[in-house]
Length: 398
Image (cartoon, rainbow, N blue to C red):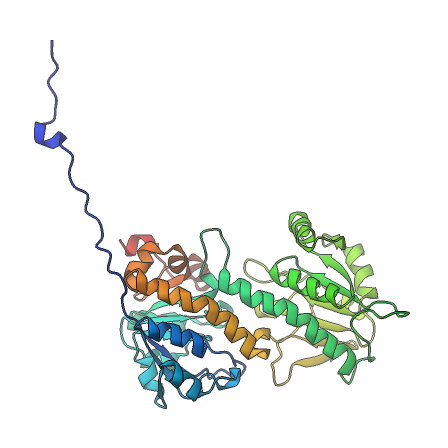
Protein backbone atom coordinates (compact mmCIF):
# COMPACT_ATOMS: atom_id res chain seq x y z
CA UNK A 1 0.00 0.00 0.00
CA UNK A 2 1.60 3.28 -1.10
CA UNK A 3 1.86 6.28 1.16
CA UNK A 4 0.68 9.68 0.01
CA UNK A 5 3.37 12.41 0.11
CA UNK A 6 2.42 15.67 1.86
CA UNK A 7 4.32 17.60 -0.88
CA UNK A 8 3.32 18.24 -4.48
CA UNK A 9 5.64 17.05 -7.23
CA UNK A 10 6.90 20.55 -8.20
CA UNK A 11 7.68 21.29 -4.54
CA UNK A 12 10.18 18.44 -4.46
CA UNK A 13 12.09 19.60 -7.53
CA UNK A 14 15.48 21.33 -6.81
CA UNK A 15 15.55 25.07 -7.29
CA UNK A 16 18.34 27.35 -8.42
CA UNK A 17 20.42 29.09 -5.75
CA UNK A 18 20.64 32.86 -5.84
CA UNK A 19 24.24 33.99 -5.48
CA UNK A 20 25.81 37.41 -5.23
CA UNK A 21 26.98 38.83 -8.53
CA UNK A 22 30.71 39.27 -8.04
CA UNK A 23 31.71 42.72 -9.26
CA UNK A 24 35.45 42.59 -9.80
CA UNK A 25 38.07 45.31 -10.06
CA UNK A 26 36.08 48.11 -8.47
CA UNK A 27 38.03 51.38 -8.78
CA UNK A 28 38.89 53.07 -5.47
CA UNK A 29 39.17 56.80 -4.83
CA UNK A 30 41.47 57.23 -1.84
CA UNK A 31 42.36 60.39 0.07
CA UNK A 32 45.52 60.62 2.21
CA UNK A 33 45.48 63.72 4.44
CA UNK A 34 48.46 65.17 6.26
CA UNK A 35 48.73 63.95 9.85
CA UNK A 36 48.21 66.86 12.24
CA UNK A 37 48.61 65.09 15.55
CA UNK A 38 51.59 66.50 17.44
CA UNK A 39 53.46 63.20 17.65
CA UNK A 40 52.45 61.52 14.41
CA UNK A 41 55.14 61.41 11.70
CA UNK A 42 54.07 58.33 9.72
CA UNK A 43 52.19 58.20 6.43
CA UNK A 44 49.88 55.34 5.51
CA UNK A 45 51.12 54.74 1.94
CA UNK A 46 54.57 55.19 0.42
CA UNK A 47 55.06 56.41 -3.18
CA UNK A 48 55.79 52.84 -4.33
CA UNK A 49 52.47 51.64 -2.91
CA UNK A 50 50.65 54.59 -4.50
CA UNK A 51 52.24 53.63 -7.81
CA UNK A 52 50.93 50.07 -7.44
CA UNK A 53 47.40 51.35 -6.77
CA UNK A 54 47.45 53.83 -9.66
CA UNK A 55 48.72 51.11 -11.98
CA UNK A 56 45.62 49.10 -11.03
CA UNK A 57 43.42 52.03 -12.10
CA UNK A 58 42.71 53.53 -8.66
CA UNK A 59 42.88 57.24 -7.84
CA UNK A 60 44.88 58.63 -4.92
CA UNK A 61 44.60 62.22 -3.70
CA UNK A 62 47.36 63.30 -1.32
CA UNK A 63 47.50 66.42 0.79
CA UNK A 64 50.73 68.34 0.21
CA UNK A 65 53.62 67.35 2.54
CA UNK A 66 51.70 64.36 3.94
CA UNK A 67 54.79 62.17 3.60
CA UNK A 68 57.45 64.75 4.36
CA UNK A 69 58.18 63.59 7.94
CA UNK A 70 58.79 60.08 6.61
CA UNK A 71 61.18 61.34 3.94
CA UNK A 72 58.76 61.25 0.98
CA UNK A 73 58.30 64.46 -1.01
CA UNK A 74 55.29 65.65 -3.00
CA UNK A 75 57.40 65.09 -6.13
CA UNK A 76 57.83 61.42 -5.17
CA UNK A 77 54.07 60.98 -4.89
CA UNK A 78 53.37 62.99 -8.03
CA UNK A 79 55.75 60.77 -10.00
CA UNK A 80 53.92 57.75 -8.57
CA UNK A 81 50.65 59.06 -10.03
CA UNK A 82 48.98 60.70 -7.03
CA UNK A 83 47.09 63.98 -7.28
CA UNK A 84 48.60 66.55 -4.90
CA UNK A 85 46.48 69.27 -3.31
CA UNK A 86 46.88 71.94 -0.64
CA UNK A 87 43.16 71.87 0.13
CA UNK A 88 42.57 69.63 3.16
CA UNK A 89 38.81 69.53 2.63
CA UNK A 90 39.27 68.20 -0.91
CA UNK A 91 41.17 65.21 0.48
CA UNK A 92 38.48 64.47 3.08
CA UNK A 93 35.79 64.54 0.40
CA UNK A 94 37.23 61.34 -1.13
CA UNK A 95 35.01 58.25 -0.63
CA UNK A 96 37.83 56.42 1.21
CA UNK A 97 40.11 58.20 3.68
CA UNK A 98 43.36 56.54 4.71
CA UNK A 99 45.06 57.90 7.85
CA UNK A 100 47.35 56.75 10.62
CA UNK A 101 45.86 58.73 13.51
CA UNK A 102 42.06 58.60 13.93
CA UNK A 103 40.22 61.64 12.54
CA UNK A 104 39.22 64.44 14.88
CA UNK A 105 35.73 65.90 15.00
CA UNK A 106 36.53 68.65 12.50
CA UNK A 107 37.91 66.15 10.01
CA UNK A 108 34.86 63.91 10.37
CA UNK A 109 32.71 66.96 9.65
CA UNK A 110 34.61 67.46 6.36
CA UNK A 111 33.89 63.88 5.27
CA UNK A 112 30.99 63.06 3.00
CA UNK A 113 28.02 61.03 4.18
CA UNK A 114 28.48 57.26 3.77
CA UNK A 115 32.24 57.53 3.23
CA UNK A 116 34.87 55.17 4.67
CA UNK A 117 37.72 55.92 7.08
CA UNK A 118 40.59 53.46 7.55
CA UNK A 119 42.91 54.42 10.42
CA UNK A 120 43.83 53.55 13.98
CA UNK A 121 41.08 53.93 16.59
CA UNK A 122 43.14 54.40 19.77
CA UNK A 123 40.11 53.58 21.87
CA UNK A 124 41.56 54.90 25.13
CA UNK A 125 41.92 58.41 23.70
CA UNK A 126 38.38 58.65 22.31
CA UNK A 127 35.15 60.07 23.71
CA UNK A 128 31.50 59.41 22.96
CA UNK A 129 31.35 62.53 20.76
CA UNK A 130 33.67 60.80 18.29
CA UNK A 131 31.22 57.96 17.73
CA UNK A 132 28.27 60.35 17.63
CA UNK A 133 30.00 62.23 14.79
CA UNK A 134 30.54 58.98 12.87
CA UNK A 135 26.90 58.07 13.39
CA UNK A 136 25.66 61.43 12.14
CA UNK A 137 27.65 61.12 8.91
CA UNK A 138 26.85 57.38 8.54
CA UNK A 139 30.56 56.64 8.29
CA UNK A 140 31.99 53.14 7.89
CA UNK A 141 35.12 53.08 10.07
CA UNK A 142 37.84 50.41 10.03
CA UNK A 143 40.55 50.27 12.70
CA UNK A 144 44.09 49.03 11.99
CA UNK A 145 44.34 47.41 15.41
CA UNK A 146 41.15 45.36 14.92
CA UNK A 147 41.97 43.92 11.49
CA UNK A 148 42.34 40.20 12.09
CA UNK A 149 43.37 37.37 9.79
CA UNK A 150 41.81 33.91 9.63
CA UNK A 151 44.64 32.44 11.74
CA UNK A 152 43.91 34.91 14.55
CA UNK A 153 46.87 37.22 13.94
CA UNK A 154 46.54 41.01 13.85
CA UNK A 155 48.93 41.86 10.96
CA UNK A 156 49.12 45.64 11.33
CA UNK A 157 49.21 45.60 15.11
CA UNK A 158 51.87 42.90 15.05
CA UNK A 159 54.07 44.86 12.63
CA UNK A 160 53.94 47.98 14.79
CA UNK A 161 54.64 45.85 17.88
CA UNK A 162 57.72 44.37 16.21
CA UNK A 163 59.04 47.87 15.57
CA UNK A 164 58.18 49.04 19.10
CA UNK A 165 59.89 46.05 20.71
CA UNK A 166 63.15 46.40 18.78
CA UNK A 167 63.24 50.18 19.12
CA UNK A 168 62.63 50.05 22.89
CA UNK A 169 66.08 48.49 23.34
CA UNK A 170 67.71 51.04 21.02
CA UNK A 171 66.09 53.85 23.00
CA UNK A 172 67.18 52.31 26.30
CA UNK A 173 70.76 51.96 25.01
CA UNK A 174 70.82 55.62 24.05
CA UNK A 175 69.41 56.80 27.38
CA UNK A 176 71.69 54.51 29.38
CA UNK A 177 74.77 56.11 27.87
CA UNK A 178 73.82 59.70 27.00
CA UNK A 179 71.06 60.96 29.30
CA UNK A 180 72.14 63.61 31.81
CA UNK A 181 71.07 61.33 34.68
CA UNK A 182 72.74 58.20 33.29
CA UNK A 183 76.04 56.68 34.37
CA UNK A 184 77.42 56.24 30.85
CA UNK A 185 76.88 52.50 30.64
CA UNK A 186 77.01 50.51 27.39
CA UNK A 187 73.98 48.31 26.83
CA UNK A 188 75.70 45.13 25.73
CA UNK A 189 78.76 43.07 26.50
CA UNK A 190 82.48 43.60 25.90
CA UNK A 191 85.45 41.53 27.07
CA UNK A 192 86.32 42.06 30.72
CA UNK A 193 83.10 43.96 31.54
CA UNK A 194 79.99 42.38 33.03
CA UNK A 195 77.05 42.44 30.58
CA UNK A 196 74.16 44.81 31.15
CA UNK A 197 71.04 43.24 32.63
CA UNK A 198 67.64 43.78 31.02
CA UNK A 199 64.26 42.89 32.49
CA UNK A 200 61.45 42.43 29.95
CA UNK A 201 57.93 42.24 31.34
CA UNK A 202 55.59 40.67 28.82
CA UNK A 203 56.17 37.75 26.43
CA UNK A 204 54.07 38.95 23.51
CA UNK A 205 55.29 40.36 20.20
CA UNK A 206 56.81 43.48 21.80
CA UNK A 207 58.53 41.39 24.46
CA UNK A 208 59.90 38.95 21.90
CA UNK A 209 61.50 41.62 19.73
CA UNK A 210 62.80 43.53 22.75
CA UNK A 211 64.37 40.34 24.08
CA UNK A 212 65.81 39.45 20.68
CA UNK A 213 67.36 42.92 20.28
CA UNK A 214 68.82 42.91 23.80
CA UNK A 215 70.37 39.47 23.32
CA UNK A 216 71.77 40.62 20.00
CA UNK A 217 73.64 43.40 21.79
CA UNK A 218 75.04 40.92 24.31
CA UNK A 219 72.87 41.87 27.28
CA UNK A 220 71.67 39.42 29.91
CA UNK A 221 67.87 39.18 29.76
CA UNK A 222 65.30 38.11 32.34
CA UNK A 223 61.79 37.68 30.97
CA UNK A 224 58.59 37.87 33.02
CA UNK A 225 54.99 37.12 32.03
CA UNK A 226 51.84 35.94 33.87
CA UNK A 227 51.49 33.01 31.43
CA UNK A 228 53.93 30.11 31.62
CA UNK A 229 52.68 29.00 28.20
CA UNK A 230 53.69 32.31 26.57
CA UNK A 231 57.09 32.12 28.27
CA UNK A 232 57.61 28.62 26.91
CA UNK A 233 56.62 29.64 23.38
CA UNK A 234 58.87 32.69 23.36
CA UNK A 235 61.85 30.73 24.64
CA UNK A 236 61.27 28.18 21.90
CA UNK A 237 61.17 30.94 19.24
CA UNK A 238 64.44 32.40 20.53
CA UNK A 239 66.02 28.95 20.34
CA UNK A 240 68.19 29.64 23.39
CA UNK A 241 67.83 29.41 27.12
CA UNK A 242 67.16 32.63 29.01
CA UNK A 243 65.90 33.28 32.51
CA UNK A 244 62.10 33.23 32.47
CA UNK A 245 59.62 33.55 35.30
CA UNK A 246 55.99 34.19 36.00
CA UNK A 247 55.40 37.45 37.83
CA UNK A 248 56.33 36.41 41.37
CA UNK A 249 57.07 39.26 43.83
CA UNK A 250 60.37 37.88 45.15
CA UNK A 251 61.76 37.00 41.71
CA UNK A 252 60.70 40.37 40.28
CA UNK A 253 62.21 42.26 43.24
CA UNK A 254 65.55 40.52 42.79
CA UNK A 255 65.58 41.19 39.04
CA UNK A 256 64.60 44.87 39.38
CA UNK A 257 67.30 45.43 41.97
CA UNK A 258 70.01 44.14 39.64
CA UNK A 259 68.87 45.32 36.20
CA UNK A 260 70.07 48.31 34.21
CA UNK A 261 67.03 48.43 31.89
CA UNK A 262 63.39 47.44 32.39
CA UNK A 263 61.04 47.15 29.41
CA UNK A 264 57.28 47.22 29.96
CA UNK A 265 55.71 45.10 27.21
CA UNK A 266 52.67 43.73 28.99
CA UNK A 267 49.17 43.98 27.52
CA UNK A 268 45.77 43.56 29.10
CA UNK A 269 42.21 43.20 27.89
CA UNK A 270 41.32 46.72 28.99
CA UNK A 271 44.02 48.39 31.06
CA UNK A 272 47.54 46.98 31.30
CA UNK A 273 48.08 45.32 34.70
CA UNK A 274 50.33 47.48 36.89
CA UNK A 275 52.80 44.85 38.09
CA UNK A 276 55.80 47.00 39.10
CA UNK A 277 55.05 49.10 42.17
CA UNK A 278 56.77 52.34 43.08
CA UNK A 279 58.61 50.47 45.84
CA UNK A 280 60.18 48.20 43.21
CA UNK A 281 61.24 51.20 41.12
CA UNK A 282 62.94 52.70 44.18
CA UNK A 283 65.24 49.67 44.54
CA UNK A 284 66.55 50.02 40.97
CA UNK A 285 70.08 51.28 40.38
CA UNK A 286 70.68 55.00 40.02
CA UNK A 287 70.75 55.95 36.35
CA UNK A 288 68.91 52.82 35.19
CA UNK A 289 66.24 53.08 32.50
CA UNK A 290 62.54 52.18 32.23
CA UNK A 291 60.93 52.08 28.77
CA UNK A 292 57.21 51.47 29.24
CA UNK A 293 55.94 50.42 25.81
CA UNK A 294 52.57 49.55 27.35
CA UNK A 295 51.92 53.16 28.38
CA UNK A 296 49.33 53.50 25.60
CA UNK A 297 47.09 51.20 27.63
CA UNK A 298 47.97 52.54 31.08
CA UNK A 299 51.50 51.25 31.66
CA UNK A 300 52.76 48.42 33.86
CA UNK A 301 54.98 50.58 36.12
CA UNK A 302 53.33 52.58 38.89
CA UNK A 303 55.69 55.51 38.25
CA UNK A 304 54.88 55.69 34.52
CA UNK A 305 53.15 58.75 33.13
CA UNK A 306 52.58 59.87 29.56
CA UNK A 307 55.43 61.70 27.85
CA UNK A 308 55.88 62.98 24.29
CA UNK A 309 58.44 62.78 21.52
CA UNK A 310 59.30 66.40 22.20
CA UNK A 311 59.78 65.79 25.92
CA UNK A 312 60.20 62.01 26.11
CA UNK A 313 61.89 61.40 29.46
CA UNK A 314 61.53 62.20 33.14
CA UNK A 315 63.40 61.02 36.22
CA UNK A 316 61.71 59.47 39.25
CA UNK A 317 63.68 57.96 42.15
CA UNK A 318 66.88 58.46 40.09
CA UNK A 319 65.49 56.17 37.37
CA UNK A 320 65.12 57.50 33.80
CA UNK A 321 61.60 56.89 32.44
CA UNK A 322 60.64 56.85 28.74
CA UNK A 323 56.84 56.63 28.38
CA UNK A 324 55.97 57.79 24.87
CA UNK A 325 52.82 55.98 23.68
CA UNK A 326 53.64 56.07 19.97
CA UNK A 327 57.20 54.75 19.81
CA UNK A 328 57.04 53.69 16.15
CA UNK A 329 56.54 57.34 15.09
CA UNK A 330 60.14 57.89 16.25
CA UNK A 331 61.15 55.93 13.14
CA UNK A 332 58.67 57.34 10.59
CA UNK A 333 60.22 55.98 7.42
CA UNK A 334 60.60 52.40 8.67
CA UNK A 335 57.13 52.49 10.23
CA UNK A 336 55.58 53.92 7.05
CA UNK A 337 57.24 51.27 4.89
CA UNK A 338 56.01 48.50 7.20
CA UNK A 339 52.49 49.92 7.32
CA UNK A 340 52.31 50.51 3.59
CA UNK A 341 53.46 46.97 2.80
CA UNK A 342 50.34 45.68 4.56
CA UNK A 343 47.81 48.31 3.47
CA UNK A 344 48.63 48.34 -0.25
CA UNK A 345 47.70 44.69 -0.98
CA UNK A 346 44.85 45.04 1.51
CA UNK A 347 43.34 47.86 -0.58
CA UNK A 348 43.94 46.08 -3.89
CA UNK A 349 42.17 43.03 -2.47
CA UNK A 350 39.19 45.17 -1.48
CA UNK A 351 38.97 46.51 -5.02
CA UNK A 352 39.28 43.06 -6.60
CA UNK A 353 36.45 41.80 -4.40
CA UNK A 354 34.14 44.53 -5.69
CA UNK A 355 34.65 47.41 -3.24
CA UNK A 356 34.04 47.91 0.47
CA UNK A 357 30.48 46.56 0.55
CA UNK A 358 31.31 43.33 -1.27
CA UNK A 359 34.60 42.91 0.58
CA UNK A 360 32.89 43.14 3.95
CA UNK A 361 30.90 40.04 3.03
CA UNK A 362 33.90 38.15 1.69
CA UNK A 363 36.86 39.40 3.73
CA UNK A 364 37.02 38.25 7.36
CA UNK A 365 39.90 40.61 8.17
CA UNK A 366 38.06 43.69 6.92
CA UNK A 367 34.89 42.67 8.73
CA UNK A 368 36.69 42.13 12.03
CA UNK A 369 38.38 45.52 11.69
CA UNK A 370 35.11 47.39 11.14
CA UNK A 371 33.92 49.03 14.35
CA UNK A 372 31.31 51.28 12.75
CA UNK A 373 29.18 50.39 9.73
CA UNK A 374 27.26 53.26 8.13
CA UNK A 375 27.07 54.97 11.51
CA UNK A 376 26.07 51.83 13.43
CA UNK A 377 28.52 50.67 16.09
CA UNK A 378 29.54 47.05 15.43
CA UNK A 379 32.41 46.35 17.85
CA UNK A 380 31.65 44.89 21.29
CA UNK A 381 34.87 46.17 22.86
CA UNK A 382 34.00 49.75 21.91
CA UNK A 383 30.40 49.17 22.97
CA UNK A 384 31.40 47.95 26.43
CA UNK A 385 34.07 50.62 26.88
CA UNK A 386 31.73 53.55 26.18
CA UNK A 387 28.45 51.93 27.19
CA UNK A 388 27.02 52.37 23.70
CA UNK A 389 24.60 50.05 21.86
CA UNK A 390 26.10 47.87 19.14
CA UNK A 391 24.86 45.44 16.50
CA UNK A 392 26.47 42.38 14.96
CA UNK A 393 27.98 43.41 11.62
CA UNK A 394 27.06 40.03 10.15
CA UNK A 395 23.40 40.98 10.50
CA UNK A 396 23.92 44.31 8.74
CA UNK A 397 25.82 43.30 5.61
CA UNK A 398 23.55 40.46 4.43
